[in-house]
Image (cartoon, rainbow over all chains, first blue to last red; front, side, top):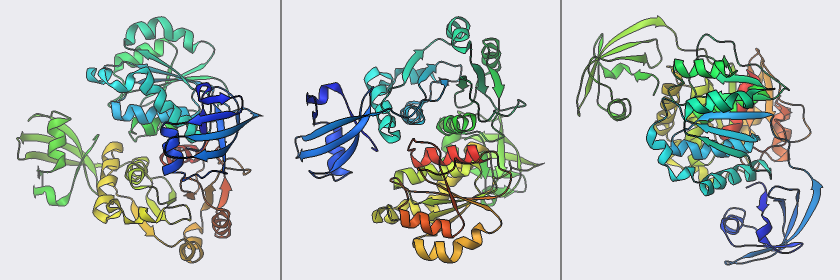
Length: 236
Length: 236
């Protein structure tokens, strides 16, 4: 937790916040924070600032909060389409996505996504939000990414994807005889990353029709989480 | 497991291998493999090829193995120095390092590495090897990275690091007012990545003296695992 993220509901006065949840626990157990300390804070959806820890005990922590005219770091100009990963990986990928500054994530079905993955409680809005918050705290960001869930590949790719791709460079990561993933782009990008086992040819065809060009990242097959950070670091 | 990694000890004849361990379990439970199937195999430390599954039961799997004159994918020209991550992260990082093709990893002490991290059983050679194998299987590689353990920062950085850096481009990832991490290098690199919380100024000073130039990857503070894949994807 490199940034203590505060929400409106934490405030008991304009410049006073009280914490009682996992953030309190983290302050005590990981930071081993003590009254008098000054912490980097951010208002969820807003500015960054400092928090002065007035008191801290097993029940709650009280902070005097000073928000500065300091914006969170810029987001990447990207919409990321991700074939739904297995639940354990999903949680980590959500953190990675939030920490790297992806503003919009689409979790998409694909032939090689196991049906059971869609049943995971980690897809509940509250569970998604929890992982995104961890990613924001890690990277010192205050703006939650938007997460869209698309359980049906074909209608999404045919009807909605073309509008998402319009005005962006569309790319789909896929191993094979494709051009290498481009580097250091400044234009907006729509990037699709497949499931473990990869997209099937039909999916590549449909994604290509919707405006995504297949690109590869070398011979090595990477885990989804590694591919996400590697592709984003290469692109921007 | 995108590659079934075989070891010399698995062979009962020149072209026959028998598996009884986690690979058997994986073939049955994840691949749901059946006799007659052909699998992508590699010989640990050697060539790639095909394995024809002759039989498979709860006790063992027998494969007819045909190794081809197909080399594993090229390694990255990098030596990676990593401040020892916390045990859970260490396991994942070892997989990431192996899957991305890092040929040599140095796990290094740093002021912000908690002393308890050095006590983890995940640092035992057998445990390290296990995670590296998972990374190789993921990326379809057969060559184990070399892992060096350096529990004392100063003697390593003063006495041994300069020789590692010689003839390479030395870089240390560090947030701050430094040049951005370079892109698309073809020269060999020695890259150091700090602990959660970062290197302390003394360490940056010593690493710089040893020939590593600080570079940054933007304002966002990334988890070690994400930083490893992002920096490697940016550099090469």
